[in-house]
Length: 133
View (spheres, rainbow, N blue to C red):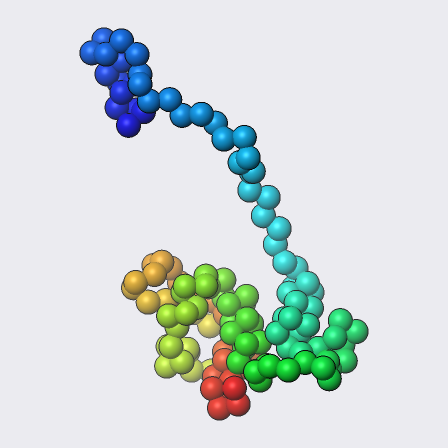
């Protein structure tokens, strides 16, 4: 609307643009922090995997089996899938494992149209988590 009224003001159709947008004072610029592979493994093992930061198993942890959650985290981290894209991924859409280290894959048409690559271990864990998780 501001642009439309701005053009009308420039052409002399209206005396002044009635649309004014104040700049918000609480807007923050994006300061994206990426997880290093080491930080991701620590987050996955402690947050999802039932481990303590020192590497020992957390005996006080109660919850669902860790296999499924860690497999999904590995698959999304290694492939770069977004939350919604990973949520639409079906087990039958995972590539059949062979001798390669990385596999190409596609996501459903209802989400972003992009291809991604994932590592063999993430596919293997995601495939086996159905039986154990």
